[in-house]
Length: 176
Length: 318
View 1: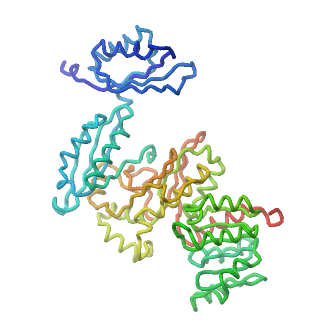
View 2: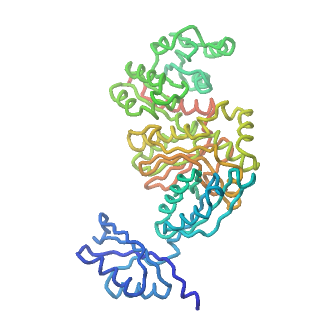
View 3: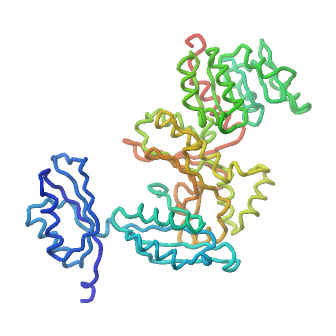
């Protein structure tokens, strides 16, 4: 099936014993089985109740390979606490206001995507007074594992440089 | 309790009018145009009548009002930035006389909180300022009842004028200038609305909240502030197509203070309409709490002032 060719991003949460070489040992099964490591969040200062160190690994792989990777991690004796994609993918919607067309909207969008943490799903542009006047855009993105803040930071940076205003989603609040 | 009230705007006048009902006596009432002081207690109706007719509450001076015999000073003069004067000086004068202070004026606790705390520490007088944050909504007393260290974040709609403008723009498909003019006609917005629509007022309230949550150290300058002037109707339409709307939200979390337009669910808790304010608290053990109500208005804000007066230690225990 062509579905199986699709590379997706996943987050794996591991608990490592605090011993030299433990992190490297945990990452080997990822690379050995065709996973593409995106980021590693090593919470060195945190310790789980069992005295282990939590590590979050973001990686890209096809669904089949991802299953093989999780199995290989467990075979290698690494404690996999959670593994998955859906629960980690986060939708992010922002509004941009300003001279969007004059400031090269497609460049704005590609720079947001280039930050690595987000893919743009959908863009709606409204320029009721013509493209020379102020216009608004609604941008819907999918961000993975903990990358929403990074994507938002990129949006702010690009908007700031181009003199655009950003209406951010309210983080954490607002839902009933 | 014996009260001296500084400021005879909507809030100061309402405090004076309602004081008797709450069992208090008004000993002095002053504003920038003059003062009325009476050691036997003022005839509030007569003083306010005089203010309506002549523009001044009396022939006395603010200094005379500050020196009058009172247990608690109600500071309801207009909020000023930076040095927060003359409000700060009034607070100092009362505390140096070991009198209580209840503030509706945001300036002293937003811009000079640490100094106010230091003055209060050296005084037998106490300082309360419930009315300075979100008018009638019991924000600070709720935080205090949970314990500031168990409140992890506070966010909300803290400016009724900006909220009126945004909710009317979204509901009627009108642009900013049009709705602002309507708000000014209704008396919801000032002739110079910048304090409200540029986010300054909400940011002052957030600075006060940050001071309460983190034990001081914050001023307006520590807040990241954006207003709503630049939001066109088209942005609100795009938000609505997606089941969302825009509100001017103040947030205090993780040591940071931010005020700006934010996307919120159209029918979500924070999308209050008109001039309503809402405060949302995140607590360590009790989850999320939402309190909404009137964020401004004379009697509404005066009720918060008088609730504070009721919390003060009795004069003989002072």
